[in-house]
Image (cartoon, rainbow, N blue to C red; front, side, top):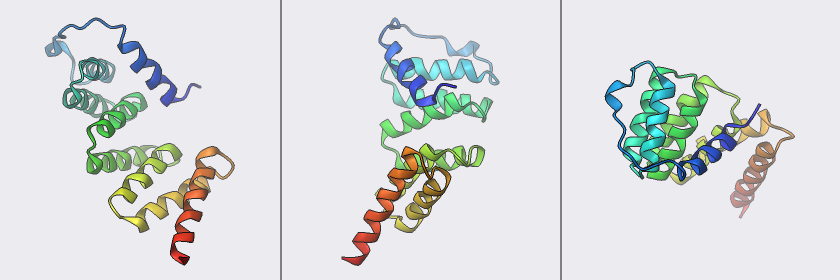
Length: 153
């Protein structure tokens, strides 16, 4: 099974090969996550981040289980630098996929930026517990150790 982030990277790289053209979104079905996600990608390619977020949001609304759209939306929100929306989106993703350590780790990072240290540490502990031997778990352990050292200084 391919990782979502690898897919997103390939898709975004392929965007440079797509022609610049306006797309008629009036024909997109409200229930077609794939079409809305495609519309979001087209808007992203055009550097219309707000339009991309709208497309990806519609895709997620059409199919909340569509991890591709969830991942694209997360990247677009990150690019827009809307930390509160990123946090909200991460929590929505975790409600559907509670063991997604990558989303949990990014959520912890965003919480740290907002100064919500206690919540960030709780997320890092979860990552560490879920992914004990994996890279995300090891990264979480390092951050937890760094926070512990800062408390003793």
